[in-house]
Amino acid sequence: MSYPKLSLQNVTRRFGSMTALAPTDLVVQEGEFVCVVGPSGCGKSTLFNLISGVLKPDSGTILIDNQDVTGSSGHVGYMLQKDLLLPWMTVIDNIVLGAILKGGASKAQRAAGVALAKRYGLGEFINHYPAALSGGMRQRVALMRTLAMQHEIMLLDEPFGALDSQTRLSMQQWLLTVWSEQKRTVIFVTHDIDEAVFLADRVVVMSPRPGRIREILTVDIPRPRPLSCLTSPEFTALKRKILDLVFLQDSSSEHHDTQESLAHGS
Ligand code: ADP
Ligand code: MG
Image 1: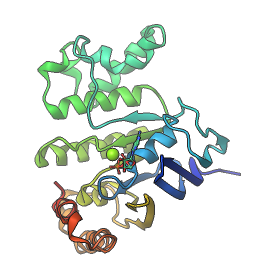
Image 2: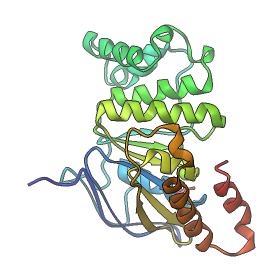
Image 3: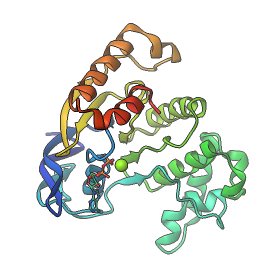
């Protein structure tokens, strides 16, 4: 019998009297690429903090490979928007930082880090320091570090949020290559709907007050996805559907700015 890679059952979390996450169910299959979209404050990062065990839920169960991991950490790779590279360490040391922190990177772990760096466009930079790298390169290093930890599930919280739109697009293509070769299960938070549709097998749309999953949409665009799919009718139709969901969920004018930025993927 095969189990889903990740399963959230009735997971909730409050901060004081505020419900950051209303009862939430989510099932993610092995090797899936799932994007999570929704306005600021709808609980996307809370969801990740619960899955990674940084936060404990108030109720509910989180299963990975059918094992109960509720409230316990160390089961998933987690990458934040801010790259958190250590400026005094070289690229290769930053990539194998997980092993270094656990008492030292072995020769084999270092070699694996070098191989990852070479395979994914960082080969020339392994002995550079982060300050010498562009924003996109730094995010590549941060992702290699997450990969090097060897977790089968990777949570990526707006990893390309600070990049300009062209760099972002090339990073998205690069990430799809990494994902298809490395066979990891990826859950990816973004407020950019184009990014979500381009990357995902399924898009989870969340809404705020209280934070919850509003709808989950399947992206039926075949892979590999060329850039031309960004302007295809299927892409546009799905994007419109997600925009409608996001607009629909909050028609009050006070949140107009959020919706505008969602609509423009900024
Ligand atoms: P998102 O990532 O979608 O922008 P978050 O998950 O960060 O949203 O936050 C959801 C809600 O929970 C927000 O109202 C936020 O202010 C609140 N929140 C998040 N973390 C904490 C915390 N540690 N303490 C108190 N409130 C928090
Ligand atoms: Mg967040």
